[in-house]
Image 1 (cartoon, rainbow, N blue to C red):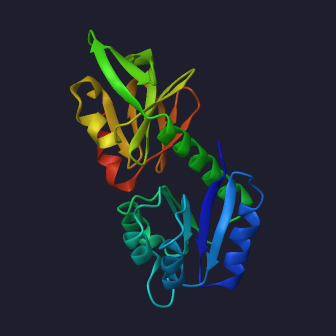
Image 2: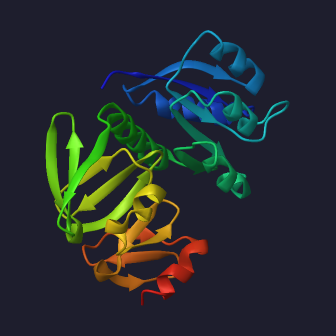
Length: 234
């Protein structure tokens, strides 16, 4: 994968330097600009397209949210902020991830892996081609088609406008958002347990207050607003 141009926007100098130092550890990230204000970043974006924006929320003048609203053409947006109360609002602006300050390198590394996965999916847009019977779908990638048995899908994970179908041995990416997939009658056995996740009840081993443990050992976050869904499948 070729290097991705990114901008870093934060009014706090120490926070800017931290993000810059972390970003420089990844060859995939090419820092195109570092800015203290949303206004200066917007001026730069007029003539410089970028792939990724790392944005603070609360800044003098325009906020990071306002910046994102004016720059939705940027494929990947990651908010880095201590204002967790704004997290839900950021995801309405096509946000890929939200990092809570203060944070350490492993959390940033997790985000970069998510970015790489998203950009790969974006490049290899997959589509549901067709179905046969009641338990099989074909996933199309390029000129190839892969048959996926629905009862073998452990969970569904949303990734912006894409969804990952996770089986025990493979991850299949499709160009449909999670909400659209769950409206499909073929996926009636899946229950949404988080903004970004849906599971099949037969794979649930244990239900905690904030997460689910699947029989495969995978932990799935449990969203507060989706806890009622879990109660209905116990």
